[in-house]
Amino acid sequence: MTSASVVGGSGFTGGEVLRLLAGHPEFEIAQTTSREYANKTVGSVHPNLRGLDLRFVAPDGLESVDVLFVCTPHGVTMEHIEAYRDLAGTVVDLSADFRLPDAALYDTWYDGHVAPEHLADAEYALPELNRENLEGADLIASGGCNATSTILGLKPLVDADILTPDDRVVVDVKVGSSEGGAGGGAASSHPERSGVVRPYAPTSHRHEAEIEAYLGLQVSFTVHAVDMVRGSAATCHVYPETMPETKDLWGAYRETYDGEPFVRLVAGGGGVYRYPEPKAVAGSNYAEVGFERDERNDRIVAFSAIDNMMKGSAGQAIHAANVALGFEERAGLDFSGLHPVGSP
Image (spheres, rainbow, N blue to C red):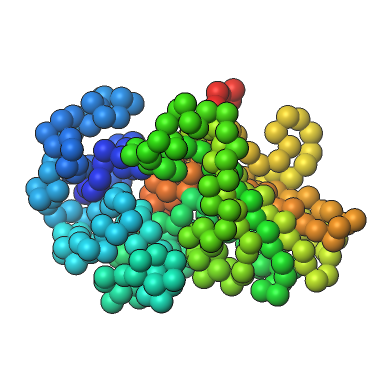
């Protein structure tokens, strides 16, 4: 068994990583840390994990393991990265600290970077984008949930040269309240969040930097907070120089995602769930992608939907670790979701 510990296990993302590790055939959980809940049981914070015989330890009690999953707010991992890398052969960071490829981007989009010498070692965790480079990686950076949903929706168009850096792209993302984390503040409280469709990042969302860095596109990007707990749904309006035929779009999406274990193509058809939506993937590591062709306006509408806590965070991290360590890619991630189910 491969030993694994979770830094910041009391948060929503940390709890999801613990849940996945507990059901993983290759991992054995060693420790999980929490400043606030040190010595308390994991089940006292995450009720779905009451059967897990594990207590939180203080951060200074962390011991060496094979793999360390770091689930802390932005800015923490970069401050402790040398200690984390000394403690584990593989570090998987679920914050934004190592997602971007160079320090200049952190100066532009964040508040700079205190450990830029480690950026060159980091590999972006999304296997559908970066699988070959993940094999054997020892520093893995899980992608942002809104960037992940957008990248998955647009990547086939980029791969097929339907979408180029000169084309106009407008992206609107709807995201659930869990994106704010366990300490999300007043805006994430139920009375304030319930029933809303609230623009909270009309321009200059930080996840734009990931999309531009890894797809080579400049996008006009807006995020709305909506009344769901889990989910990130991206609607991407693409205006290509040359409008492709419908068959070419089908070919592009199939070419990119045929053989991908966690991507489902949902584009029109019959039934209630005709296009990707978060409710259909809640709790799972699956992504749904699809498209619609608007010939009248020379527009392609690309859709994608993920569970922001899974494909957009913990599930992506486990998937990337599976690839890095040579495990079966689906290990620990085979839950297919529920139907019917209430609000994600």
